[in-house]
Length: 185
Image (tube, rainbow, N blue to C red; front, side):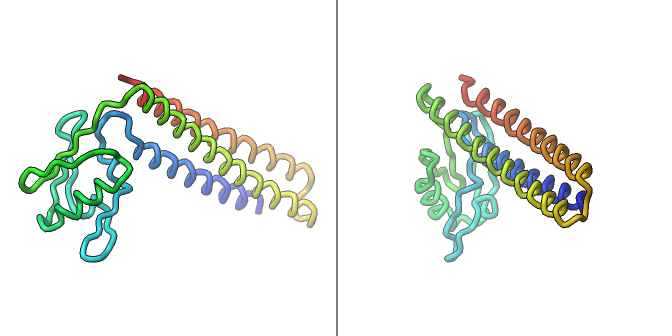
């Protein structure tokens, strides 16, 4: 029973980390990456569709993306979705493909992005701590019900704390790496 609680807590914490890494990949760091377009949904035949399901996305140069739709009729919809997004990039259509040039980030914009990364990291740490709290409440309930001994409860609580520390360290590591990437000129 204790093991089930710990396995569930670890699984939930892993999902938090995966989501955080996906979110960081979508943040613009002055370098072109297909992950920048992951959040963009294109209105295609009346259905909001992820851009990567409508086109292939390439990176011919470090600061340029090329979107090549499989259906040429989707080009205007893709352009409109990119313009409406928060990327701040203007698409340039060249025949059957769309070029996106990622502008160089200013120092102020880099600092703003670092603040966004830190804020998101703190939110993820809170989510991880909430998972720890849920696990500890479940352990205390089991202890009160007499399903586990006090020693087993204390050991499990220590394990939950170690698990939490491990995942918070992963958040810190990912945050530091993204900050470094953002601040690189």
